[in-house]
Amino acid sequence: MQSFFRKTNYFLLIALIIVLVSLSPLPAFPSAHAGYVPSAPDSNYMDAYPSYKIAAILVTFSDKPAKPNISGTKNPWTKSYVDGVLFSNNDSMAAFFAETSNGAISVTGEVFDNNGLWYTINRPATIRGTCNWRSYFDETLAAVDVDIDYTQYNTIVVLSPQKTCGAEGLAGSVDVPEAGYKMYGAIDINGNMGSNPHHELGHLLQLGHANSWQCDAPGVMYGTNCRNIEYADRYNIMGATGSRTLLLTGQQLENYGWIPASDVTTATVDGDYTIQAFELHGNLPRVLKIPLGRDANGNINSWYYLEYRQLIGFDKVSNINRFLKPTAQELGVPNGVLVHAGNSQGDNFSSTLLDMTPGSLPGGKDIFDPALPLGYSYSDSVAGVSFGVLARNATAMAIRVKFSAESLCQPKAPTVSIKTIKGSGKPGQELRYDLTVKNNSTLCGKQSLELRTLKAPAGWKVTIDKQKKKTVSVVSRQTQKFVVRIVPPKKSKYQKYSLSLEARLAKKPSYKKTTLLQPRLK
Image 1 (cartoon, rainbow, N blue to C red):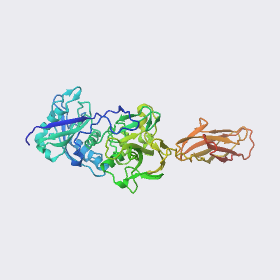
Image 2 (image 1 turned 135 degrees about the horizontal axis):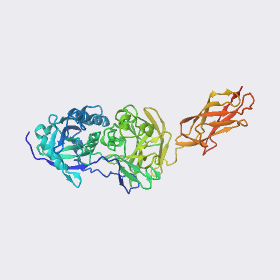
Image 3 (image 1 turned 90 degrees about the vertical axis):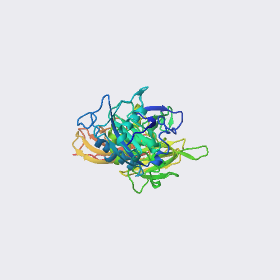
Image 4 (image 1 turned 60 degrees about the horizontal axis):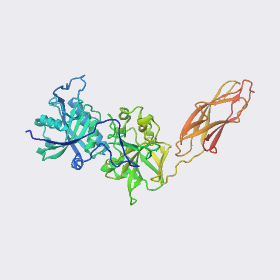
């Protein structure tokens, strides 16, 4: 194929740094995210190419070439390896977008590696410490020109295992004159593969970074020092994913039309709503929308988006554990509901993860456990709405919604039950019982319960394991088990005795329950 002049458009630098903070003066989440320029690539690119036909080009640099296809070398990016990452592996870029878009996006292509030798180009010059991407792509396309018929593709991906520039990934566009100066998507992967190609293709789809919105006390949506933290949604391929390939949010899928209307339910009245695990495709909705903000005319212009994310498919634990420690189970994400704030349909840059447990972890780690846990609720006094997680199982979750800023907490008396381990013995010997305490309150979160001994015989020593303080903490609708140890005095009479144990809410002591123990000395 004859060579021709190529004019490289401009590129959007998206260095995958872990935390880049951009402050916002807004009292709520921002409508767009800093760090991403939505004018590149062309705004019609996604509509023109729902099917991505990729020419992937492996390059090395003339001053210090890598050693391709040699086992044991530092960067053995072979043709088959790159093909697997982009097209053929179960967790490839093609498989990821097929799943997250519900089949709306197709990714196919071919890898060009110069017969295993890679294409050798000059190392990119730098401009103020940043690579000259224009000359980099111009030279790459010139080197591979004789091997590629560009009319068969609409996206160019250039890959180099040598990290020469600050950014590990870059997305933008190139004009190809032979194709009538049609806009081609362009991606560069520089030094680190991971899930960077997946992330960059997201940018070609006009997706901004997946950020988080965090405020100091009282936290969540409002408070002091509210800030938009770039990349900080760690449960989205467009966040600081490292090598994780986690699904896009419900708001993003809705904006792109990649989710059936039946998979999204909107809360309009007080009630209990059930959603299925976000990764499943059954008879229940996958996303719950709750009104958040309104414009001057009273029209809803922003929403809470609630998702029940489980360790299934691309959200499986192996993908999460590659970047996050401790594990997702310890962080509690599968035990609660992820909440994003997003603007009305059509805004691809406003999907913002909220930290529903503000202050639970120190510093920048606070966003590591963002889910609203089972048994907890949240009230937004500005939007006039409250919601909480009533119940969950492996596949579905029940969420209560009330269009009022009043707390959803409904306190109830706890339940106590006893199982005898050793209920009889001689005076001075230890007797043991298993004590189970259930917090029957609804959506009150973690509550303090007092465990007390009532009417114990004189001189009897009663201790409850794990009760280091006067109270114990038990989450709404959940149980805790304790061991009760009883030691009667050595001079006690051989007979049957009775004593009671009481559990009560520390802040509402009238909510209480007792159980009877009847040890026997013989």
